[in-house]
Length: 383
Ligand SMILES: [Zn+2]
Image 1 (cartoon, rainbow, N blue to C red):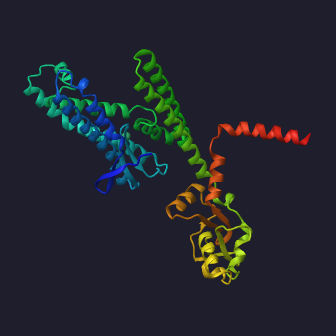
Image 2 (cartoon, helix red, strand yellow; image 1 turned 30 degrees about the vertical axis):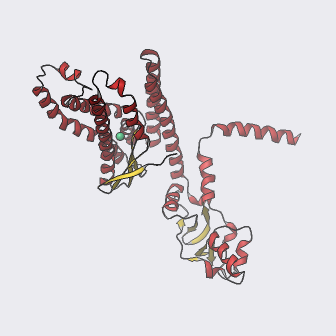
């Protein structure tokens, strides 16, 4: 996949462009005959400027989300634009529905501000051009003139607002809808309801676009909404399961760890891995697989665990939710973390264990099939 390039920095937020954006401009130039029918090169230049400005409005929309998120203390990674639209990559929301609603509303609100600022310009340009009715303004949309440019931009911002406020995932309206329902029925149920509304809406849109107006683009959009709504539902289910499960249930005892006074070579028994170093039941260090292997390759087996271990490593409490442990491991780039109860070693939690938990909580349509097949196989073996 092609990577997005960072092209600008707005108040410490990186703005990234995906190379597919170039295709949109290329398409305008290639399709210039049709676009500029009877109006020549001016129409092509007008369209290029227009496309550029519309992307600008999408960027303002995403920056609206990003700035609101930062205002509320939520971390923002970056904002990126591609041929199919924009995305503000914001740290997962901590299940705070008020913040979620404000962040979702901030995007369309930014476009509302742009539309409000454009309105006097449109009216002024219309008065100068001698417009007498609303129809005169409507007819000027896509017209290669200054008043046409202002009117089309106003029109584009209104469309962005309306489209994003549809009460379906992945649109902002879907998030607002869920955030409004969450305090009443809980986040899981709210997501499920918002997803169902989104799926019903997308199905109606699909039928409408295929049967009534025969638009493939709109049909693809409907399919896109369906897929994203399903993915959101799945992600929220996994997340809430991860918040429910405690790390203690999944920690590996791993022979109680290894003592700091042991020869390094003993750590290899049972295969090279990240091992907690314990003394009198307390965690005193972490012996990382990589440093163990590097050390053994270098100096032979003469050294002790205490010489190579990392002293006073990060530990987690037995009751910490898996969700938080995983975030911590990603943030601090840890491959494993010892689990303790009132300071006493209870086991080690590793990335592999996380994958195991993840597989268990991910809804898997094939699992049922596999279980039936396994059951059959077992029965055959018994006979
Ligand atoms: Zn948005």
